[in-house]
Length: 395
Image (tube, rainbow, N blue to C red; front, top):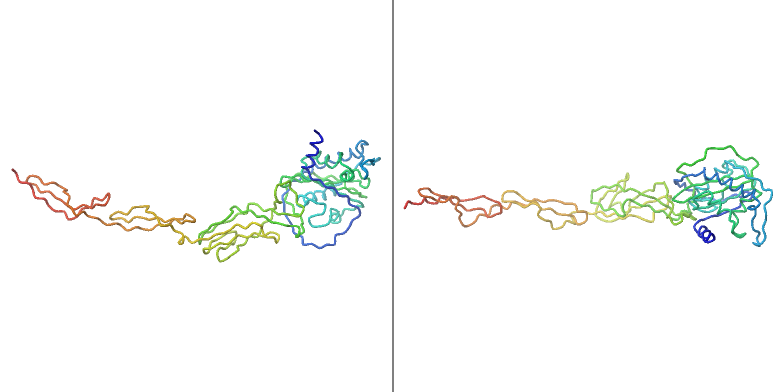
């Protein structure tokens, strides 16, 4: 059962280790793009890994690794405990944000972790790096890095942790896009920075420099999949999310990398619609699309924009207010695209008098009556041509 769980664990987790010896310059010139992302640091927990490393280095039961023949072991005797270096922690934190975008020992901008050492005024003679992704706790990631049950070829992280070439370590941890990313930076330093600083457990916007050629895709999601406007109508499209595909990005199936930077939005055909000051306006009937560009890369998705003139799309209309003999009525037309309405007056019908006469007051003895022609229209009581009816004679 334990073996099965471990196999599943290793399938779900993603780890990588690299040992770095003397510094090697990266002479390749690249176009650097600053990419802003939001990460949550977890340095309080990250620092607890130091004790786990030192327990392995000073415990004869754990301080070994396989030789290349996978039959004999090298036992690491007389290893000293590593000290925690707060300069290396800065590098590890930076690298944790970097591997969140591009999971590789090569940095997103090119080169390796030690390229930052000079920028941070860190002196060293040897350096190494372990990286990991998806483990949710410090003990979990340390267990994976230990690689107790791996052959020689799978114990690179273990050899870093047990290397006598190193005397210090700094550890970084970020949570980004639903995934935990971990970095261990090992080094041998003549002067170790042991001056403790408060552990950073905050959520921050950080800028990661990325080689533009490593940005393979940009996906911009708007608040609508498509926009439909009348001529003269305005709307304000809202960008809900922007994600990018970076070379070596790994998120465990959680999609591309979400970024904080704002794309530049433009309109395809400016004669059909305009886009200015975040406002989309319909100009003439036709179709076009919104285009979003970020870091010089055009979004793979462009919501269509259709503009219509309602006068070309009115239905045949329906009477919504009946005209009367004296009052006009109303006819309402509905646009088949946007369901806008327009109203037109329907002329009054005028009276329709009957050809026959209707008695209004019946004649009586010695009293004349009256009759007239009545309007036959519904609910109309108008009469015309009233005339007398002769009084009846007494009998």
